[in-house]
Image 1 (cartoon, rainbow, N blue to C red):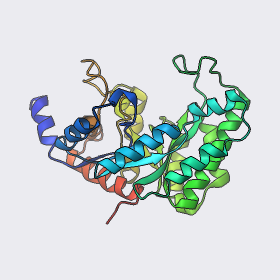
Image 2: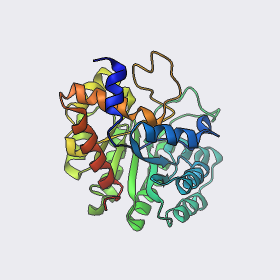
Image 3: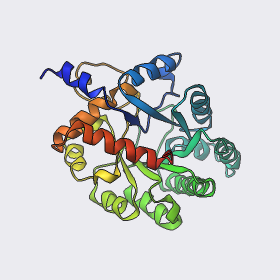
Length: 290
């Protein structure tokens, strides 16, 4: 069977992109077209996470313009650096603005929030560096935002990059039973400790396009319990193969079926099994079940 025919068959199924940055500059002026293309590809729901106050506001606006598109509001750990570098001890204004957005029914999650120890070579912060003082501030901001998710009964979208021990420490310190089944490890690192914790706490595992070109993630996805698996593009990033080799940038929500097809092949399952399970999982994760 040709690849084109496989994709046409795949596109008849319903899918859910649980993490797509339609609020980023790469998609400015193109959001309506992207959502239409995603719908034609069988993507029925999209969640747009914020990474700071401004992108959270943009996510809010997009969610209110399109049905079955939802927003998340939060401060990404990378952008906590702005608070850290400025030396401001008081970041309650940013938190208050995030909390204001959580009052809205189309803002269904706090995210993306977390801990990040990666030393970014390309960033808008010219003096970006990761030291222990910065990580401590990330932990404080994360803790406060998890408490917002608990208080407002919202789903929690977690970012972790090279900071497994830090994020598990924070989660253990503030975990409440209501977070079970309503938390996701976005673009989860292929780590057995994270998977063990996710099983224990009923945390969903987000899988992205990098599963198609990372041998570690390819092996990891085979071990994720089906009841904890959700799909995400992280658009405009993490373009899956074979689109990556073809340089079909940026990544788009319409590419969710490519990820699903790859996982189905590696797990030796029908694509319909992946589609149905991940769609049901995503609806549960975000409290969208009828």
